[in-house]
Length: 477
Ligand code: URA
Image (cartoon, rainbow, N blue to C red; front, side):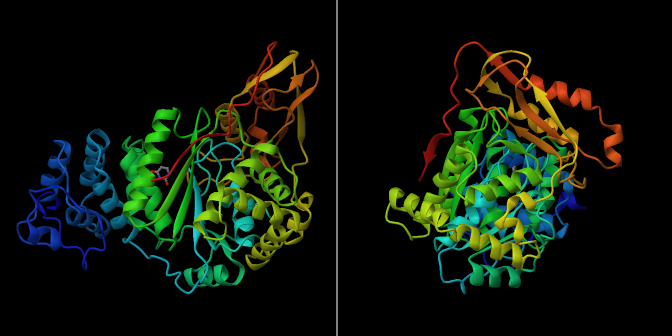
């Protein structure tokens, strides 16, 4: 019976550089595995009682889980024990590396440039990856980016890329590495062989109320990113109503954990805490966001989106060792916009991945909904707040996002914001527009309710207002 099984030896020596302070584990045990190894219930009990597990114990648990020797109910109990008792940075590092090594780690040694990626914890209107990755690649840093799909109120890079007609996010690992060598960047989805332990564990966490655990989130994010074969990672940890982390304290704790564990895993990691009270940019929805991101590469686009792209991009250039300092890095990124080299790189990526490259030269070629409804202000004054969470959820209800991983999205559905926080508005002036679905799903949509929800997301008052500062803090080791 699985409950009585001892966690069996990992298949090969541990690659983990993590150290343990757990003196109860003998030298023999921490170097490999012996018949004295604890059983799975003993490991769960130790974590439940606030003890620490050795790297070898964690690796055995993860590999046993992937093989099916550790049952789902045992791994769920372990996740709940971690949820309540936490993990040391060393344990979290061992979990991250075990999950990374549960699948294939992309070998990027043949790519000569330094490899740096960016990950965002997700927000409403966050389309930064689409303009950031080609811009950074145009400056000489390789960007092997493996992204996810949208779930709930936050969007996903893959859905936005697929709004470009023909664009494919599926690619084998060898082709992925070759494209990073040839163009400097590839933008793909997670393959089945990248960190399978994370996929399996996340599915359990999702249904056992154990997602909101800093060590589990850290290991989940980093295991996938480290499997890309990167040298460095820039993290955008979003804070606010539209973010996964609602408070600055929680976001800071996650950012600190990600930076520390990334460093213990031998990588350079910087985390930015950035505001997600209002949506980023002026669009929500896949095709609309793809257009807006491409506009940034053309030197246009909204100021907040452009600024965040430059902030994160500058850090990636520093990690990529192609800039002397932040000022130099920003100058190089701005030059890559000015001389259109960012546009050229995205055109090459889109072309190589089957998309219509003309959409990069002229983003207005990206299809748009034929059913657009304007929402006008019913009050005069200044926009005090725009509720990112409400608009993100509205986008999902309209068909732009999904509530279950297996749902399709309508790429043309979304919202365009005509007013931002701090803008003056008169009665009857357009606040935003809804880009509605037109397929069979649209028949079940209550468009009047959508319009009411959009209007309610704007707070208008008589006092002047300022948008929240975009970057709240930067966390380096
Ligand atoms: N994103 C991830 O990839 N994993 C988590 O656990 C939470 C957010």
